[in-house]
Length: 375
Image 1 (cartoon, rainbow, N blue to C red):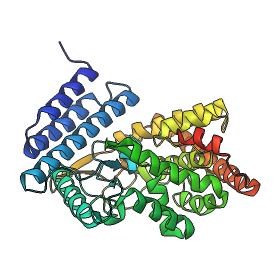
Image 2: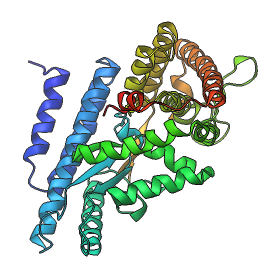
Image 3: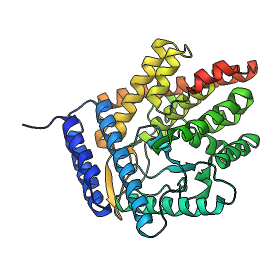
Image 4: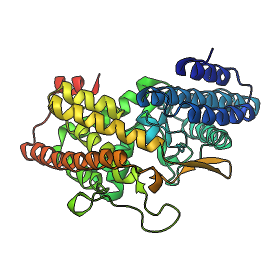
């Protein structure tokens, strides 16, 4: 009997859990891509994303365990302190595609006095081993160096909080970008309590100073929806994808950015775009009609992303994020235009709501803050 989607992916995750080393995981990752190709178009997109992201998480957790064992075998011992390995970007939002790269960080418990240097040395080595293992399995490192291997994204709890405070105190363009990246963080391995405390510190800063939303708004609107005059699609003009549409930066990223800022404005600590939309509806921050439309458009953007061609280069899986001209059927064009029009509407709503919130300047009460941050 042909296995169902769930059982096929469950079997893959079982193989990951039982894998003895990185080489075996690299072979399983290739099988993961084959399974995705097989299931694409046969199953509901939301379910396929769920299975895909569960499997990515399982792969990453296994790589971390192998990295810990490798360090122990090298004489570095066990982790000296509790820690949390964090995913950001699409991983943090539980929206990883088959070709997602590495966007991660690490937070560890504040070390006792005199142990700071030793803790940093251990977790630096651990982060390096994790990056190497994931890269061998086909996950390219983030080109922007959002990696636990980079000391900016690998700190003690106090170090993380100090860094966030510094970014908030000087919210220039680059710091605002870092803050938005950090707002997507999610614990995939280790102490969720550590990750939750970093998220709480983040939301406390915004709740106590609504003006911080303005630099985040400017950064959020950097990626405009790709819709031209008279509602025309903006297509690639040159190169191998001429005539195609950039789904990632023309539709998906603007939707993600807009929903994220509405969530931050309302103190919602969820990192998943779907969960953020549902929370916005539940709290009355958007109408049920608007939120439902947002969810449907976002789901279509995810489906279109999965249909963009991907390839393997230098052992890494990658995509240009562009839907080719030959896939732009009349139905696809109509859905895409509707989605892009909604994206523009969503961006306008974000501007109104965020500027209105800043103008009111209301500070969140401690009770409301605890509710919003899930503490």
